Amino acid sequence: MRIFAILMSLMLALGACTSSKFQFYSGPEVTGILVYKGERKMYLMHGNQALKVYDVGLGFAPQGHKQREGDGRTPEGAYMIDRRNPNSQFHLSLGISYPNAEDRAYAARNGFSPGGDIFIHGRPWRNRKGGVDWTAGCIAVTNREMQEIYAMVKDDTPIWIYE
Image 1 (tube, rainbow, N blue to C red):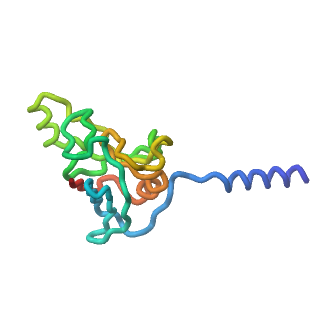
Image 2: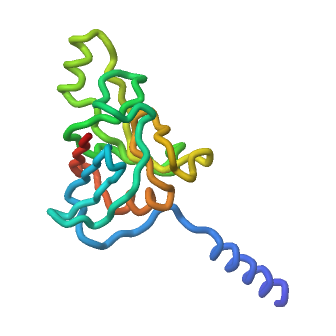
Image 3: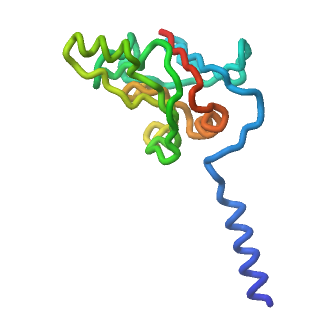
């Protein structure tokens, strides 16, 4: 009986130490996301009300709209959250629908690839403290913030990214 009690205590203690990266959110619906690159801010909106505000990191060449693969820029314009990755190498991630038809047409006219795989995501260990713009064009927040965003934002949520 004593061994059983010790094993049960150990299991309960281990269970209390683990935490899921998946959170539950039951607040107001996020109806849109606003990103202001110049301010390095992202707003989760419900109508005209900001529910949450985050400091963000951007692509390693943050000025201007993303036009081609490898340019290090974060896109500007109207997009949608179109997918989610619970197993991202950047903790959790939400896909942004870049490139849109206009982005693809511009790249085709100019003979290059527009790139893709633009996400809102967390940070790998080496970038855990934020700081400089380091992504290949994505929008980065802390892992804890990403858990919150992942729970709050649904697929098909519009995102507007401004300079």
